[in-house]
Image (tube, rainbow, N blue to C red):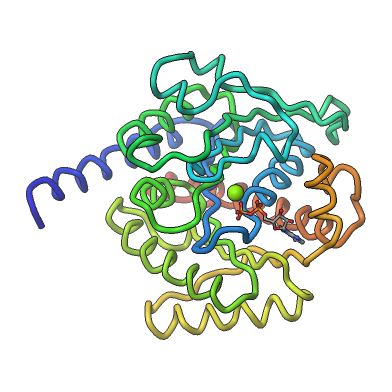
Length: 304
Ligand SMILES: Nc1ncnc2c1ncn2[C@@H]1O[C@H](COP(=O)(O)OP(=O)(O)O)[C@@H](O)[C@H]1O
Ligand SMILES: [Mg+2]
C-alpha cells in the first residue's frame, strides 16, 4: 500500500472512531444514526425509499434529515415539491451557511404524538461529477458537523448509484447501509458488486458488515422478493463468505409513480397501498435495529 493510501486509511479510521466516540458519549436516544441508501443501478427507487422512510420515521417522532448525496441526479427536492434556494454545493463552496441550506419539509399530516409531521432536507445539485460536487474530506466534515449538531435522530443519505469514491466512502462510514435493488438481474448483479466493495471499505474503517441490510424494491410479491434476496444471499455466502440480512421487500405499486408525478407522498396519501404498508414495516425494522444497537452498546459497556 502506498504511503498516501495508508494515510487515507488512517484518516478514515480516525474519522469513523470520532463519529463512534461522539455517539458513544451520548445516551442512546440522543445519538444521531446515519443511514446510507445505495444501489448499483440507478432507478431502483433509492430516492423514493429515502423520502418515504423519512416520513415514516418522522411520523413516529424521530427527528430526521435527508441529505441528497446524489450529485449526478439529485432529486429529493423534486420528489418533495420543494424549491430550494441553496443546496449542498452552495454549502460546500461557502456560499451559504448550514442553516440556510437546510430546508424543513412540512407534510401536512400529524405524527403519532399529534404534532405536525416535519423533517429536514439538505438538497443536492444535479449534473456534477464527484470531483466538482463532493470530495471525501468535505463529505466527512459535513457528516461530522451534522452529527455534532445533535439535532437529528436519523440522517438519511440518498446516495448515487454506482461505486464512485465518495459514495463508497459515505457508505462505509454510515451506521446502517441499505443496499437497494429491484428483482432485475442487472440491478442484482450491480448491487452485489456494491456490497463486495462495501465489505472491503467497511473493514478498512474498522466496522463490520452486519450493518448492511438488503432492500428488494419493486418486488412482484413478498415471496418473489424473498426469492430474489436468496439469490443475492447465496452469491454473498459463496463468494464473500458473508450472509447478509434482508431489511425488507417493498412491493411494486402503481401508486408510487403516480404519486411522484403529482409530488405527493404515497405514505401520506395512500396509507393502505402495498408499498406504504411495506415501507411502514421497514421503518419499524429500522427503529428496532437502532433500539437493539442501544441494548448491545449498553451490554458492551457493562462487560467492559
Ligand atoms: N415500490 C415501487 N413501486 C413502483 N414504482 C416504484 C417503486 N419504487 C420506485 N418506483 C419507481 O422508480 C422510479 C425511480 O425511483 P427513484 O427513487 O428516483 O430511483 P433512484 O433514486 O434509485 O434512481 C420512480 O420514479 C418510481 O416511478
Ligand atoms: Mg435518486
